[in-house]
Picture 1 (cartoon, rainbow, N blue to C red):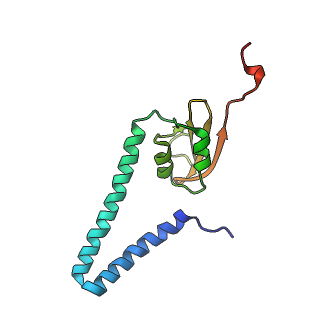
Picture 2 (cartoon, rainbow, N blue to C red; picture 1 turned 30 degrees about the horizontal axis):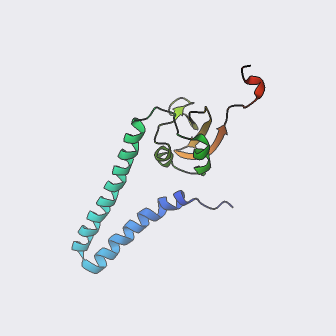
Picture 3 (cartoon, one colour; picture 1 turned 90 degrees about the horizontal axis):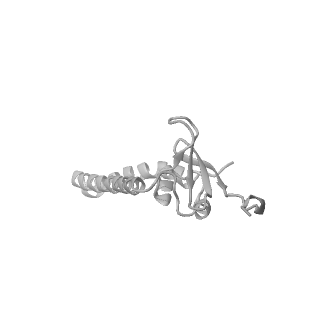
Length: 143
């Protein structure tokens, strides 16, 4: 049996934690506590929206499919990572290798040495990735 990932557990724990926070606020302070807790939860959601906007703004300022180091990017990847975390790491949108809205989605990030990482996403989660490096065959080099 496979252990659930952190990201799938987080999907369940975040709403349960928010509901528990509201119940605790009501039991301690009544409806005034619920209003205060809702204010805190709205602030939490706004922080996450701000993070998404910041990641997308940084990605818009770089060429699509570019990463500083494909090897270091490959070393940081983990299964089930959301696409937003990968965009935050690369600070660039990936070069799409599949048509839009087709599952699985495959994106490529390439660095200056033409090394590239192909990432396969299913429902916005990283499932597989592959590092490709240019051949260092001396026969390919010009005399």
